[in-house]
Amino acid sequence: MSLIVAGTFRVPPENVEPLRPHMRDVTEATRQEDGCIVYSYGEDMGDPGLIRVFEVWRDQACLDAHFKSAHMAHWQTVRAGFGLHDRQLKVYEIAAERAL
Amino acid sequence: MSLIVAGTFRVPPENVEPLRPHMRDVTEATRQEDGCIVYSYGEDMGDPGLIRVFEVWRDQACLDAHFKSAHMAHWQTVRAGFGLHDRQLKVYEIAAERAL
Image (cartoon, rainbow over the protein chains, first blue to last red):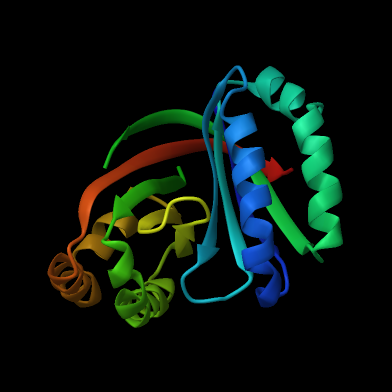
């Protein structure tokens, strides 16, 4: 069953720009992973420093492999150094999907 | 069954800032709707002008009502005037959810 990972984390608003190239790096690497359908970060349009995560994965095994990747280990270290906090992510199991 | 609405649209990057207050308005109004669990817009961290949409709704009836709301009609007019294009949204039916 496909999975969505979605939610938010916060960084100090002044750290959004310094983090941008690191987010691009982990995004580009993750999109190469087997079973990665969507992987994205966005900054909330109404709440500076609130980063919105949205991912779609083919199955749990792919998501498990993602968390063991070298680029995720690197990203976890980088983001901690930029004051990431209040990380709130959910995993949703997708029963069906359609175009809106 | 709960539903996720997620995807993207594009605006010319120079229109992101003028659109920001309008996005805040429609977001604040929509979050007051019955059955709206999450409603959000974010600008992609690696692709200026790419706006990421993420919504969670209690059920289809609530989502149907949302599209008939006055604030959505207003927002659809506003956004067209700012060059919104390439809108690609999906509806996902959620079978289960858990914290990551």
